Length: 251
Length: 306
Image 1 (cartoon, chains in turn red, yellow):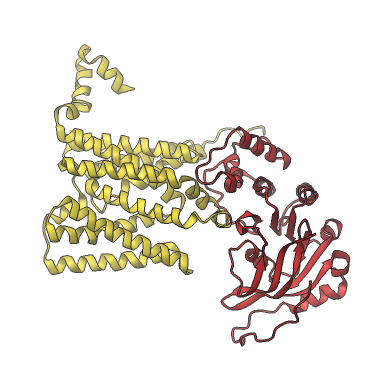
Image 2 (cartoon, one colour):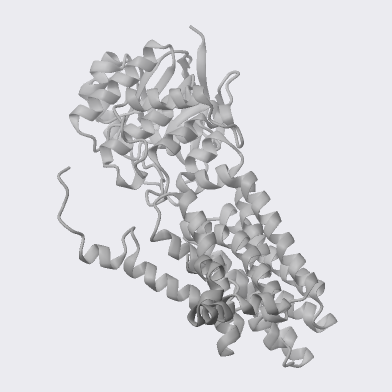
């Protein structure tokens, strides 16, 4: 299996303060990777780096021949104006942007795909509802529909099952497994260790610096989790520039 | 509806004849009224959709701020070459674009929000304009700059307004999809496309063009009225952006028509008359609107089964 994503000594952060520090490693094409770690561990920052809305402070994120705009990204707190007068149908239709662009019309083909995608996440019948009338769970289902329609080779989900009931998260996990079966590369930031153990073969444990990365059962040990909890400290405003080069983790 | 009935049966009754005299005759008899009507309809077509987007982006007051930013530019044009249409249009456009683009760039490049950076820039340009005016001395004609006079509009001005409205509709058609997505979910647009920033800047340019447009008819101080009030009206009647744009354009055109008549019969200046009619429609919408109107909220009827 070839590598889909390559991290070479990547440091990501804000105002020169690292939020992800010296990350190296590879994600194989078709991998299903859970990214776990305490709050503030840099999970969201890493994802923003991958999809190209945050430039690394140092190091390189290699995507191979993939355009970062072809990665489907589900942010943690979607910055969505829910009062905007747009229907569920039109909203998820924006997932076809890469294919239809500014002007492309939505032909019969696309309309069928949108209807199917809404059906696949259990939102049939919601087509004409304004997005502001959806509940939290329905909103998340709608965002998954858009990811589904983006039809991307790499999918990045930032805490997709937060504040979602068991039924909804089970449905959405099934969708993630389907993407995995379709050989798409999926990265998801998660807090529910049971869910990770049950569904994700590979795990990256992140606490600003990577703690462990590999098979889930080997990564999610008590010692590793404890170590991760101790490694997250607040930004030090007086911190000196980082000169140390972490031993690069050969992948 | 009333109009159709009136025109078809106007020979049949004194009463209908009076309505004809009041509503139709001013436009058939006076060319300046016809020209003014064409002007407000063009303003409605261009300005109302822009107003809807301003409102949805929570930039309603930003529009107002930009209208003030246009004043010094237009005033400089006026002081250099008198009541010259092109000098004032050009001055207004330059001042408006400068403020819009600089504030847009500052908002995108720094953490300052758009409204704050715009406030900074328009205050500067307003102060600058007032300073220049006071150096050159004041003039009564400046009242024209401040409040406009749609009834005194000449053919050239009408053509400029129609041209700007056409440009607005064309550009809006081009940037419509990215603009809508940028309003709903800006992060998503950033991850799939680079169209966000150009669409945003083009939109700000359209705001300026339409403010300058409104400035010719209604003056700097009321120019934003035919953009924001119709948008507010539309919000109370539709849950869909397409419907909102249609309603906004219709209510702006209706306000223009009724406002011109009000001005014709009462000698209220045309600009305030148009805005007052629009404000009346707005109050009616706030009270009786089908989407979250007050009366509907107070008497919602029995709750539904599912």
